Length: 165
Length: 87
Image 1: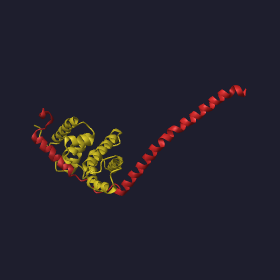
Image 2 (image 1 turned 135 degrees about the vertical axis):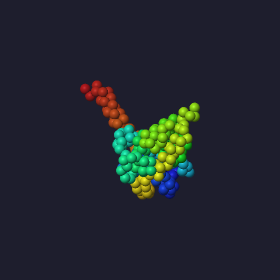
Image 3 (image 1 turned 120 degrees about the vertical axis):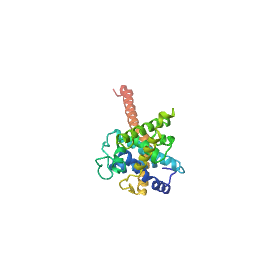
Image 4 (image 1 turned 90 degrees about the horizontal axis):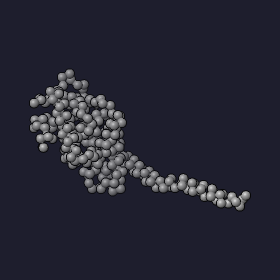
């Protein structure tokens, strides 16, 4: 904890917690475990020796911890493969404008693919930043991200949202 | 080489648009603060103290069985060496 004081942590928490919750929720697709993971990520970040003036480094670190916790739990089979549908049940005919369908399509991706896509598109992270957030090699990120995008494209095509050419 | 890792522009746009929809999906209790930040801070401090105590205690925990074993060996040797005088 050392160089990070309580006020700085409170500010960082306010800036980061909502985004981190959204990330964890979308990646695990299971609302019940979100708070546990987010809390554990912040606790571990506090126990790490990080410089007090680098907000971005904290953010990447806390996302990396959360990503590792997600992968750990996923490996232990704690998460069921079911999807937390956020809104009404899926309409019989999938439609792009339907939030539940969007959530369901996203949940059909693997957790790592969801994490990669979220960090790239929602958080707007570069390959280097994603590599730091997920603890994988920078070159690997490029390949993994391409595979995730290709798989998402296939899912969109399978639903008729994107025309196969 | 670049094309290997690129979708076509239309697919790219569709993926980006889809991810934009994903980012706007409602999250249950978006403002739920897991617990009060100061509680989180205190918990982290407590854990850190326990870890520091455990680190400080570790050499003592390691030394204790060594001390006992050393005492037993010394007693045994003493008995062995003093045995001729006792008999």
